[in-house]
Length: 194
Ligand SMILES: [Zn+2]
Image (cartoon, rainbow, N blue to C red; front, side, top):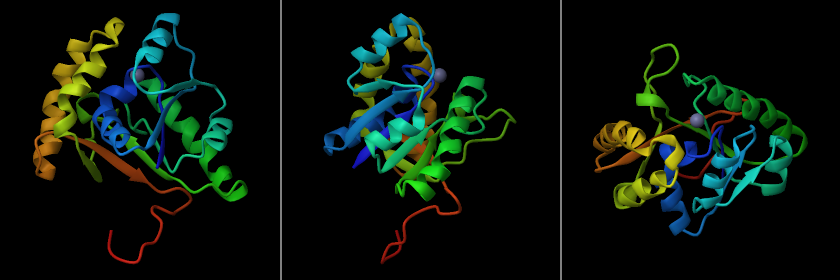
């Protein structure tokens, strides 16, 4: 599997899906993080020091075509941070043409945001959960690498969220995602219920 996370800031992917990235890396999935917006030199250094390979490229379509991911994960469309919504909109804008004209096949997900509450006050309703119980401590280590961003603040906010989704899905800690349709197609058909 090839997973491409497309995020506004270094630390976004690690905070909201760091456990999932660690879990998929252990399964030998190929993981990359794409940053399409400008970031400071310090944040670039922190991104490069993270354990996942990163790409700094404003051209999202070109990056998707060269990386050929099976799974794309980005910010929630209802995120209360304007840069996060901006990145979601940029990704959502390029996907239809890539599907129709470049024939890519990809599943599209978004991850949660601050306390799982959106811009309009609505709750993030996960459609998919990933059990990250075994990766919780390592996820904390990952987030701590982003020293310029007050990691303790994020860890304090994340813990009850990952515990709640863990409780909802019957494990200790989980990360939640929403799978989104692209041009009306949500998932590839499969032979049994999945
Ligand atoms: Zn961010």
